Amino acid sequence: RWQLPALQQTAAGLAWAMAEGREVPAGSGPPDISDKALSFQPGVVLDAPPAGADFGDVLTEPEAAYAPGRRVTAVFAGAHPSNDLHRGGTYLRVERRSGDGDGDGAWATVADDGDWSTTLRWAREGVAASRVTITWDIPENAEPGTYRIRYAGDARALSGEIRGFTGTTRAFAVGA
Image (cartoon, rainbow, N blue to C red):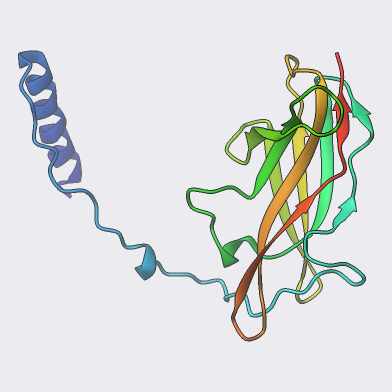
């Protein structure tokens, strides 16, 4: 009932402090209740790769070459994303090879799952298998070069142990 007036009172106090150039104490932050969150979804019991594949295998490779503005799609044998939420990390990376073009250059990240140009879609297949579809909308100003997509997942064994894995597509060209 008093939430709006309390918010208005706090906002007014902050506005006056800003107008007068006064510092305002930061106060305490919100409590971390992440371990107390309710979930009505059943937990992950087991992950298994699709038949004939291993975790991280690329089930659908990107095309060999793309023009800027096109969409790259890759499908991986994955695992349930809630096994590890990758806080402070990423599930996917779009990487570009640097160097002189002899194939020995280092790979540098140009996009990840925090970018608007990428998407990760997870889908359960059967009881325990997962397919992860990653797309990257190549920006119009993308630097020509050799690229690849990397996926990082975490699979849960029946024992409850979680093991990380990665998958990498073959390299593809992005041209002008």
